[in-house]
Length: 292
Image 1 (cartoon, rainbow, N blue to C red):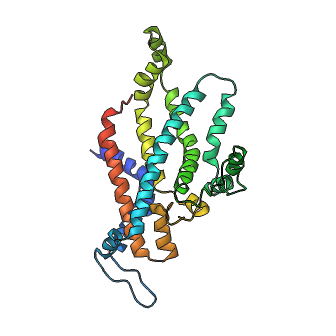
Image 2 (image 1 turned 45 degrees about the vertical axis):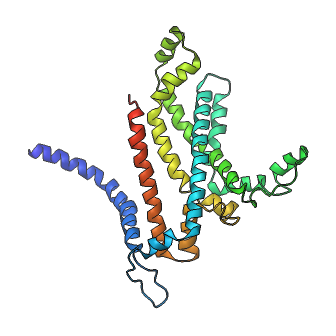
Image 3 (image 1 turned 90 degrees about the vertical axis):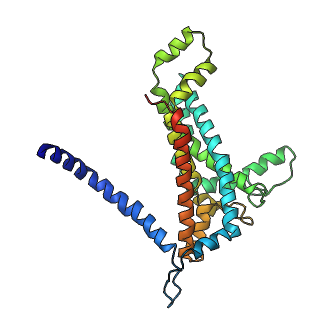
């Protein structure tokens, strides 16, 4: 018994630094935010007071919140499938034996290591009306000038393109690692059985990469709901809240309008939404995951 106790104590002591940082920077802020969402924001000499669910009632009646939520769902549906599909295609491509594949891997991964502000400014030049690179190409084919970031119909689409371009290379690294863990004997056996490359990919490769897909999918959903840098640089949520995403709206409420209690309520709604999505993924996708 003393020896088993020493082993357990030693294990918990090794985990203590990580647990302390997790509690200090994750659990405590979440609990503090939840508590603050039930209070009013202090204004000058007026202290905060308990208001119960008033902030959540205001949230449900806030049209900008619903617009931001709708934009975020469209943004997630636009970025997640495209970035994951593109990552799989790039990983399969650079996993083959082809000349210059090291340079190709570097080219695909480069957008990931660029600072988000720098990426936003690069694409801001592409989308600039009349002078941008995209405008120069469109003029060559006789198309009319288009204010890509100033039109409600195209602004969110432009932000989706930037996010896919930046995230696909990051997800490619995980899929490339998963592909390199698949034994070559499986490909040889499939070839002996006369299976085509598409059949081998669909019946063997993709199922074996399901653990990686589940991990990437969770990260992709989190990334789609935490984008704020690109929005600040490229559109500032406009035009007419057409590109206002949830985290950007929380940032505006908390740091521009200085309504910290209402921003706390918005944050709790965002955390609840992410938790429900993560639970749904594990419930519906876990049965299709094949662990080696």
